[in-house]
Image (cartoon, rainbow, N blue to C red; front, side, top):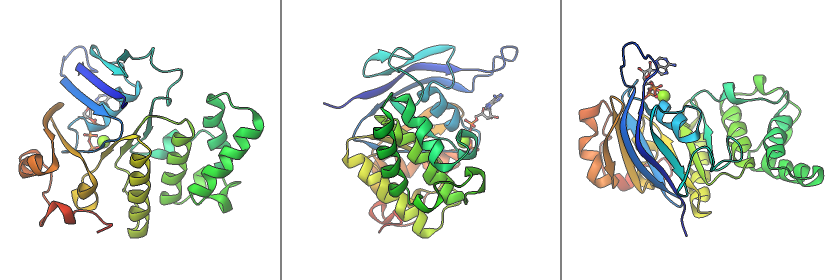
Length: 249
Ligand SMILES: Nc1ncnc2c1ncn2[C@@H]1O[C@H](COP(=O)(O)OP(=O)(O)OP(=O)(O)O)[C@@H](O)[C@H]1O
Ligand SMILES: [Mg+2]
């Protein structure tokens, strides 16, 4: 049975004086086992919406439910249930070393020391960071840092993984590696939502395409249905067939 991550009538504004809504009456239903791609112009509210989905922002109106249970009761702690790799992963690193950053995430699960060590080594290998395990995360390259933040997010075993512009700064093999990881996570039944400006890298792998415009969900559906409308909302429509829109193709 799949698990849903549901947004019900969420509106968010930060400046109470102007009452300008940054998110407006958002309704959304994400499912585990589904890979969704989200696009939208700069400042349209994508990152804010991801933050609402992880509980980093509490909306003034509406609610978020994980498996039917309203936030925050559904979560034992932030990062469980729904994990996020933010647009600037540097800001979410807590450890003094690569290894410590992953261990801090594992601690949240309350595992014993030996299991933590075992899981940490597994994640270091998975992220290709074994040789960097004692390194200060501040000195990692951009691609290494993205892999570390993803490893630390996965350490908490979330059901949903949200990625904010995950391909930024990645080289061609780096993008391909990440796409393989996303396919693997989907096959494990995780729900994935990736925000990007570059549909040509990933759309062929997506089950669903969401378009955000001025704080609203302006389109949501099968990529073939939604793609013809993206250019109305500040998103480039790549040339060619959807099946070819993947850097793994
Ligand atoms: N703390 C804040 N205070 C005031 N305004 C904010 C705050 N956080 C976000 N905003 C505004 O909300 C709007 C949506 O921001 P958001 O970061 O979600 O955009 P985005 O769609 O992710 O854009 P991009 O593609 O550039 O990353 C922007 O106009 C932004 O300036
Ligand atoms: Mg953003």
